Image 1 (cartoon, rainbow, N blue to C red):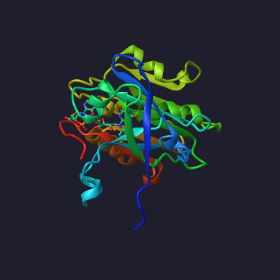
Image 2 (image 1 turned 45 degrees about the horizontal axis):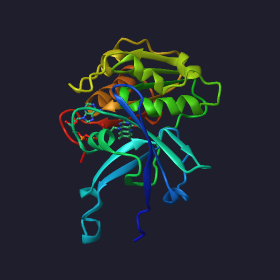
Image 3 (image 1 turned 180 degrees about the horizontal axis):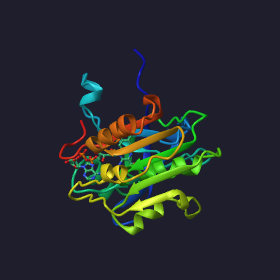
Image 4 (image 1 turned 60 degrees about the vertical axis):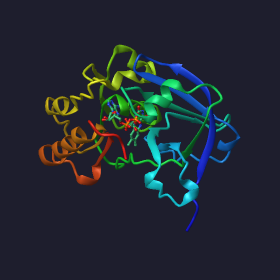
Length: 241
Ligand SMILES: Cc1cc2nc3c(=O)[nH]c(=O)nc-3n(C[C@H](O)[C@H](O)[C@H](O)COP(=O)(O)OP(=O)(O)OC[C@H]3O[C@@H](n4cnc5c(N)ncnc54)[C@H](O)[C@@H]3O)c2cc1C
C-alpha cells in the first residue's frame, strides 16, 4: 500500500482580512515538491492531530479539515489559505491562535471544478466558506464563457477576497451568519432566473443547502447531472468527521 504524502510547513504570515476571515500563508522546505492540480477549487486537508498516525489509527480518525488553496506560489513555496472563523472547532481555533513559525501539516491537493468546454454559461453559488475558491476560479478563468457568482458574505470587508478587477461578475448577498450558522443560499437560488442555454453550476456551502441547490439545478433547471459540482463545505450543528 502506498504511503500517503503529507507536507510539513510553517506559518509565515497571518493577516486578519476582515472580521470574519484570517489569511494564513504557509511555507517551508517541506513544500518544495508540492504540486498543484491547477484545478481552481483545489483543497488540502489541514491535519491538527497526528498523534495516532504511528499507532495504526485509521486516517479517518485523524482530526483534519479541508481548506481551499487560495494561492500557490511555486517560486517561493508559499501556500495561502483564507479561513472563515466561526464560534468553535479545531480549524477555527488554529486560525485564531496560530503564530508565525508554528508548524502544520497537510495533504496533497484535490479538486473538482470542471465545466464542459461547450457550456454557454458558468454559475458559482457559494456562502462565505466557498469564497476563496470562487475568487480563484474567477481569477483563473481564461475562456470567453460568461461567469456569474452569487456569494453570501457576513460583512462588506469579506469582498476583499476577490480582486477588484474580478469583482464585476459577483453578486454579493450579506446574508451569511457565521455565528448562528445561517445560510440563505437556497433562497438566493430560488429567486434567480435560469440563464438561457446549457450551463455548468458549481455549488459550495452548508451541506443541506448545497444538496437543495443541487436538486433545484437538476430538477427545476434541467441541468445535466455531470454539469453540477456540489460540495458540502460544512455541516450545520455538526463538526466535520
Ligand atoms: C473542499 C472544501 C474546501 C473548503 N475550503 C474552505 C476555505 O477555504 N475556507 C473556509 O473557511 N472553509 C472552507 N471549508 C469549510 C471548512 O472546512 C469547514 O467550515 C470546517 O468544518 C471548519 O472546521 P472547524 O474545525 O472550524 O469546525 P468543526 O469542528 O468542523 O465544526 C464545529 C461547529 O462549527 C460549525 N461550523 C463549521 N463551519 C462553519 C462555518 N463556516 N460557519 C458557521 N458554523 C460552522 C459546525 O456546524 C459545528 O457546529 C472547506 C470545506 C471543503 C469541503
